[in-house]
Length: 104
Length: 209
Image 1 (tube, chains in turn orange, brown):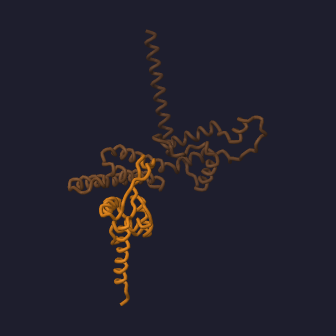
Image 2 (cartoon, rainbow over the protein chains, first blue to last red; image 1 turned 45 degrees about the horizontal axis):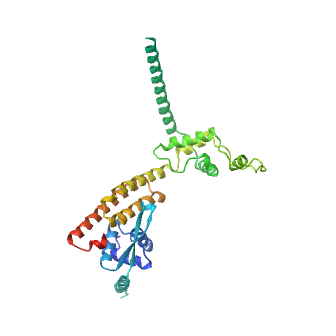
């Protein structure tokens, strides 16, 4: 079953716990949802760049690593604006689910 | 005339030798493919023996292109011909004046049957193939990296290489790594297309580049 959460929302929430790079963020989302939500590789990088363009996250290069053939990792961290949006998203989602599950 | 006859005779002799050598190799390969069976507990015991004395055993995964079975066989033959020197013996050789150290029991010498069975079910074979596949895919991506914009070469392509290199450690087979490499290639192509389409549209390329 597909979980109806956008990659951008999932990544934004994954970044709340700290900075991370593409692969790590995919793992973080998968682990935090017990494997129920797996982001596709093809959707992660465009989503991260879109979040960066919107000013919700910012990115910086890490140290070059041998396991990446001497390339640095590109880390992302959430901005104050991003944290505000993530909080707002959580509040809206909680409200929606409360509406759905409220006993009649 | 006699020199010519001698040369022809030598050529024939050489041809015979080469033919025999080829037949020997063919027989050897066939023999190794039909190795006898061993129970799992015997195999485990053998593995434990070799772990205690790894100098005899070449299972470090760095075999390269040589067929794995032949490499393991070579390792066994080497071990039987030249018994591995124990650390105790080494210490005695380097410092003859020191008192004799206690003998370390490294277990019994494995029988040929046991050793060959270990070769037939060499646990490292799939790992080595997976590592080779990951290495090859990483090399291809590394070679292609100058074609990509710097940001994509560092981020997407770097993640692709890192992902491929950690797959053998997760126990993934070579075919999965190959499929993953193809998937990553398409992701990279899509990233490049997006990058250039953003450039044409006039969005903030500096930020992404």
